[in-house]
Image (cartoon, rainbow, N blue to C red; front, side, top):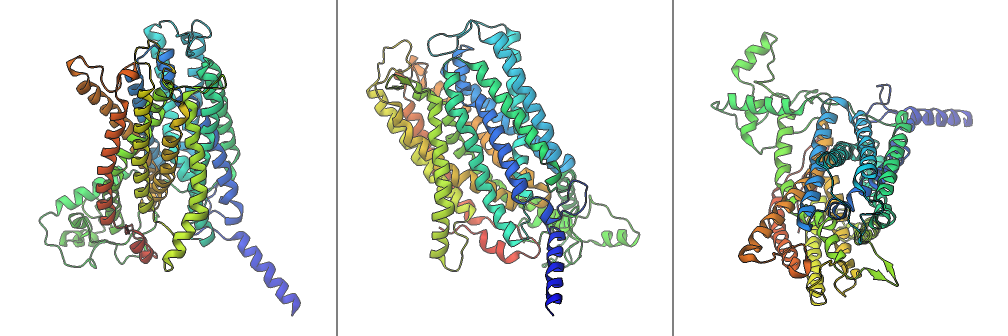
Length: 598
């Protein structure tokens, strides 16, 4: 009897070890992934370390880029802020390229590897061009000695390098987040919880990676050692690539689902062709509703929803479609399964929420441009030690780390207990709304600090670095508010878009987060240009002149606070309207989760 129980335990253990994932992931050889031998936190930890190193490399360039443009290339404050916004925006525009290639053809692993190689090449090129051509005379580029003039070819090589960095990081970033989430089977209760936690740890790794850039590298670059900073970034990016390749055999993979543009076009064309057809009142007769295998390219089936009814025509089986089926003919440009139609509906439902996140990204991007310029015009010395203005963003990182801990360990369990019936805590939509509220506080805080900075400023200065007696540490609250808002907005966004996009568009979901940041940078650049054009009429210096002591940067911050408040009102309306994706087997969870409860 005892022997029988032992044998049963051994057999059960062997079955658990050989059990495959339920979400359809594959291993390196293309076989169904075995849970015990792939993915989970072993692969997840490798990806988190990779993300930390890659972020260190990226922010080693990005965090002080505005100062590099002003000190080394001789650009003025407004032009430098605009160029940084455009470059950062381009980084995130390239995320759409990476997401498209990943979801359609290459898969996430191959896409991540290729774009990381481009990232390394861009950083090496930037390091070489800066050391050989741009930093002349040697030691220039600090707060005391600007660099000399440069030829058009040298400037072109610089921009080619930083835009290679933008392409490499942009194409890699949305895929690595989704690839990390792929390592956890959401159909397994334990791994599903780990998948939710992964996004918080991912964002924490991102911020910890940038902490080194904002402090140590930021200090060296501020002292004029730009080439050293760029070489360290290149080495970090190379280490990240090697580490990523080391975990190759451990990763889980989803097969690419083919060109989504083609699938979307088929739905729109098929619906348009049947625009004059009388539609039935119920969906029982739609193509793919009752079929056992009506998914798209092997992905999970999406259940029918009664929104955007015009698109339902693409799934309506007309008399002509019946005749075609009898002859063994299937035309995807005339008839599409319900799951394919619901893919389009899912994206259309996401768009209003996504648009509402753009203004938040305008607020976020000030941390890399105007916050730095504001800090440079404040008192930056403490006990004869100079604090690099860009290093103040370390308070943003510390705030992110603190609030991730507080949210995961304190706030989320507390809200779950208060709700009693719903132990999940705040929904992603609610957290994003909280992020917008905190963003308003960040801009109000920055505006108040600027008002006091101006009161203590020498307005007749020529070189205005440190021209105000107000300490740079008065910027701490605005950085802390931005960090707190990121935990609610950007982590919530990552979880929301990953959960609400169809299986074949997961990288696209992460790219939506990054594209929001991209458009936020472009909108920021447009706002700065418009504000400067309007505020410089009648020969006035404008709100953001080269000498901030003669401007009104505070008014720009208060303008952003007002725009974010309006955006919050619109967001709440969109969030209350939103309905979540309904996957087969999980309709009741999605019905409840999609509602924005105030």
